[in-house]
Image 1 (cartoon, helix red, strand yellow):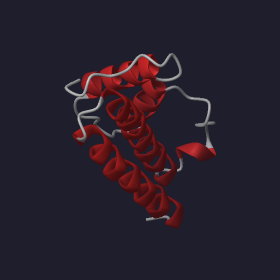
Image 2 (image 1 turned 90 degrees about the vertical axis):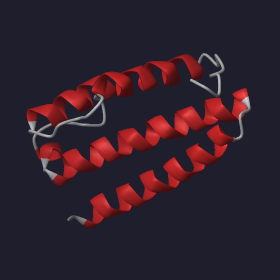
Image 3 (image 1 turned 180 degrees about the vertical axis):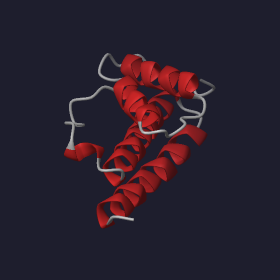
Length: 107
């Protein structure tokens, strides 16, 4: 595994842990911040997987949307379980940031 992949996954894990802490607080503001962190962690994992497979050598990944990253993973033969749920998470993030519509803790 590439060193950059490992560093990306460690960063994603740190964001995930912080997101869980924020979401568990049950506050709408903290849940919204946690939602943003959780989606960012997921996007970092997707990018790390594509970079590990050298997709970045043929395509520019930085400008790809979340849905496009899922599509690139599927093209590489990587199954993305619950991709519809993950896309819904991304839509909720878009509502929370930058439009500042607060997420409910249960969502």
